[in-house]
Image (tube, rainbow, N blue to C red; front, side, top):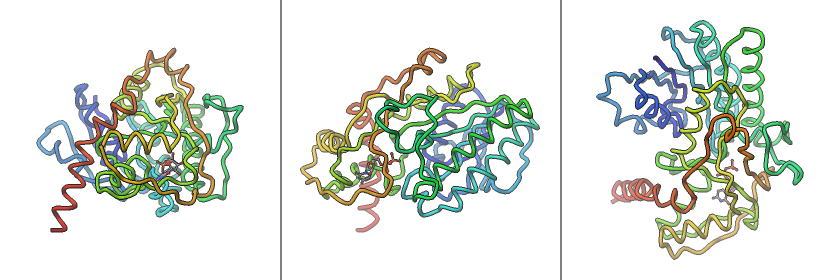
Length: 318
Ligand code: UDP
């Protein structure tokens, strides 16, 4: 089978390329490297079933036929998508449509990487979030460039299923972490790990009572592939339902790294969701999937990667 992975040089895209190659497929990764990095793919340079193309999927493209199209191209951290707001809106709309066209012409299975951000800032009665919840998104707030782009890409994906009969899947991804998470993307795990490993204070935004539910990358990729191979078209939440306050998360990073850093409180960004936790009943039933890696264990598994990046930065400064 031949698979296309848009955003293939990104954090999740690159892990997906590895997993698809592991299943025996040929993989073409396309990325414009706006937030992705070729270093995520450097271990594949001698792999004959793997190919990388530097390209922006917002321009129509034709790289032949595929059996699978995985649409993972987009800035994904709040810092990245605020910096690249227009590009984020374009890749969620025009880029997604171009990727859907490739799937339609190839009669490929299309899997859309959507997000828990479609739920916005859910009220207590929508907690944990089920797929049936429509969301509470500020359409003109600072997060809207990402949230509305992904909501539009869901609408476009479902329209291709409805009007063209394209065989689509949609996954709503919840906060995922692990090796290859960009150290400077501003996300909470990358920030806390970097700060702890450098002995700097950990920056907790607000009072740290907001919650997130963190999924280790191997669990996330396993769930995504199970969805791709199933008859369930979703959207399906794939995330770890273990919920932590951000303050608890900071303390866990200190424990795992052994750092003595202080915790410093900084202003909470506008529209920061107060709570987030996936209801994974559908994933359990339809895919027989559930996450295995607890946050403490996943942070330990990620530590060598973060340590290596911090060491490389220090070495480059000397
Ligand atoms: N956060 C924090 N300190 C940081 C980075 C993030 O306290 O250095 C908080 C942020 O305000 C949010 C949560 O951690 O409540 C998760 O943020 P992240 O940017 O990782 O992703 P989000 O889930 O908001 O998209």
